Length: 314
Image 1 (spheres, rainbow, N blue to C red):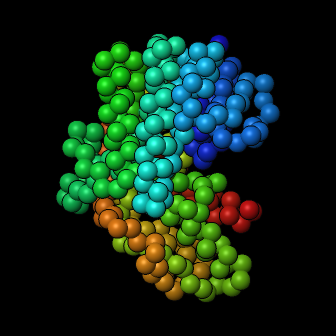
Image 2: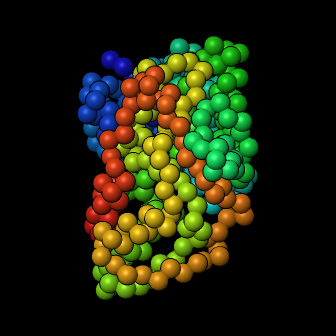
């Protein structure tokens, strides 16, 4: 029976990965780690433990006891905006906890396959003519979150090379889907627009910079990619997890208004504009598609409609 350790199982992606395993590997045994006191699920295949991953001794005991075959490291502080407000907390929560985890793997479970989740933010600001970004590009992180993710990736490479640990890495681009918190931009738009729809067909949408281009991928496609990487990826390799297509935030707002049949006034909120922001971010998913056989299943419209349904029912 294959054993998975999932850190951050109660988070946005963690929940979807657990649900993916129930469908695609129903015979697995899963140990989920998070900060919640109680597990949100009651299932015989799932063990849950509330654990502070900053506690190196505690994570060591867990890894030594459970001895997982596969580790999906999802626990993180993943908001770029929040990283500007609390840079030290961001760095500790993204780099310190990963170091604790791979030290535990090195000491107690060196044959485990580890998936280290990184971010497209690591690439930094490239001009539109340089798109799409591929895994061979130099990294120029432009915010505290991105710096932390680069540090995590460097640790992954170091431990794979120095200790022969079976670590694979992602640079994951923006992912969205039902259940995402409103601190993230598309979810924020949809929550506001659904509220406007409840009260009429005209209102004000508060936004930051909506002229930026991003590569968005449905979280359900993301976890499918993570499963393929952890099971079939190559040790020491980095994989972009992205759609390969770019869309402006303004275009997404237009799509949402069309679906909801809304007319809105856009209000620029200066507090939502970051100190620095990459104008164009589009990923190259060739390696993921051609080496691992991954394909996108959810269109942007499918995802947006599902997110609208979610916020209507919250």
